[in-house]
Amino acid sequence: MTLEVLTDYFSKYGSIAIFVVVFLEYLNLPGFPAGIIMPLAGIMARQGRIHFLWVLFLSAVAAMLGSIVLYGIGVFFGKAFFHYYSKKSHKHQEKFEGYVNWIREKGYFGIFLAKLIPVFRTIISIPAGFLKLNFLKFCIASVLGILIWNTAFIGAGYIYGDKIFEMIGKYLIK
Image (cartoon, rainbow, N blue to C red; front, top):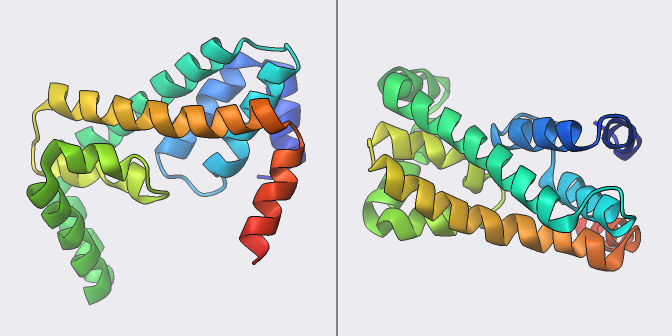
């Protein structure tokens, strides 16, 4: 998904588009990078098209719903998911086991930390469900990490405006 397409969706559909795109991004679907989505929402807030706190709230709710869906997949389909994922390659099996071991070692603090690491922040919900972690504690750890992550990215768009994409582009090109 290009920046122009996202901008068009956000302009046409406002809050609904932000919610849907963030939800899909937290499901770890390809084409929905937080490095684009969140700053763009911040730019919209800076331009007065949406209130900063509202976009932060929407993004946090969408992110939590995405995390809960993946947690549910882990709870109900964890073993099947693990077997399917493991059959793809030994590397995949090691990755999934690594995620599970990370949670076993770090606990809920690990969930919080994982929500601050790209890609890991979305994937970690599946092994958390697989381990059947306490749902309320999972949600608390997740929302704390999500709020920090989303505030940083939305805030970057709000503070730096369009220049944030130049900054991100230079960082990614290096």
